[in-house]
Length: 118
Length: 137
Image (spheres, one colour):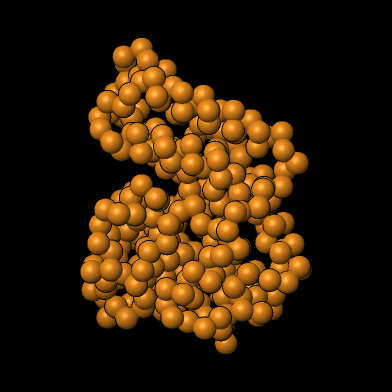
C-alpha cells in the first residue's frame, strides 16, 4: 500500500465520518430511548425493531471508521435484541451506557479514526 | 481495464466507505444503489463484473434481491458477494442460494478490495488505476 493511497483513503473516511456522526448520535438516541422503555416496562415491538436497526447500523458503520470497540458494543446490543422479544433490561442499560462512553470518545478524539487491528 | 463493482446497500455510510475503498485502494470502478429494487435495475443496465449486496434492507432484502438477480438472464452470471453483520453471518446458506461468498460488516476499508478479489478469484487487476478512474453514479 503506497502512502498517497493511504492518505487518500484516510481523508475519504474522515470526510464520511464527519458527515455521518450526527446520524450515529441519532441512532444512539434511539437505543437510549429503548433502554429507558425497557427499564420502565413500556417497550413495544416498534421501539424494539427501531433499536435493532439502530444497533445494526451502528455496528456496521462504526467499525468501518476504525471505532472497533464501539462497533463491538453495538454488535452486542444487536445480538441481545436478536435473541428474543424481551432482552435483559440490566444488560441492555449497561451496554447502552458503555456505548455512550465510547461514542463520547469518538467526539474527543483527534477526529482521525484509529487504525484497524488487521 | 478496471473492473466494475456494484454496491447495493441502504446504509449511506456503507455505500460511501465501500466506494472509497474499492476505488482508492482497489482501483475498481464503483457504482452504488440504495435499494434492492434499484440495484437490480442498475445491474441489468450496467452489467457490472461483480455485485456486493447487503442482506438486511427494507422492501426487497438481500436474499430476495439475490434471487431476482439470479433469475434474470442479464444478471444471472454476475458474481454476487453478500454483505452482512456478524450476528447474521451464520444464519442463511448464501452460497447454496447462488452467492459467490460472504463479507462480514464491519469491514476494514484497507482490506476490502483484497477480500473481494480473494472471494472472486481475481488477481489484483483493478489495482493502481484508481486515481485515473472516475466512478459511474
